[in-house]
Amino acid sequence: MLRRSRLILTLFGAVLVVLGIGNALRLAKANNSPSAFVQNAIFSNKIVVFSKSYCPYCLRAKRIFSELNEKPYVVELDLRDDGAKIQYVLLDLVGRSTVPQVFVNGKHIGGSDDLRDAVKNGTLQSLLAVR
Image 1 (cartoon, rainbow, N blue to C red):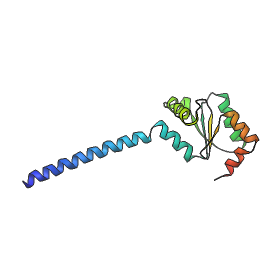
Image 2: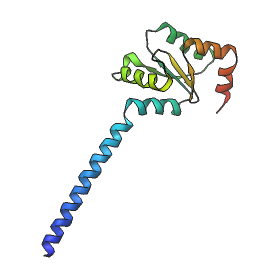
Image 3: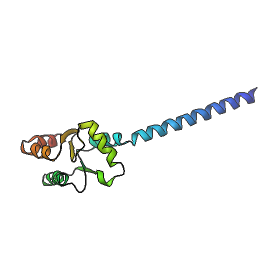
Image 4: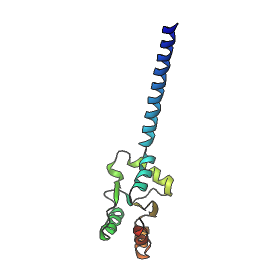
């Protein structure tokens, strides 16, 4: 009887371990999702530019930050395997799938023209001063 109880407890423990590993793998996969990546990028960096390496509007946005002596975290969507998925996440998040999409201190600025306007009216400088 004691042997049988130990066997049952051992099997029960093994089942719990397998379930725990499966749940951990699901959580890890969710944390590596494009959505999690976008959220993490936006809230872990002062400046984030979702870009494509060949896009002239993206180059203009990156140049604006360079002229302000700011170093954005740039995500080149065309150089990533999950770039198209990230672009869909941005569409859901901000209602646009175009690039660049610029975020400063977690706030969505918009695209290249929006960034240029934010520089002209002082909004960008105010956002950069926060932190």
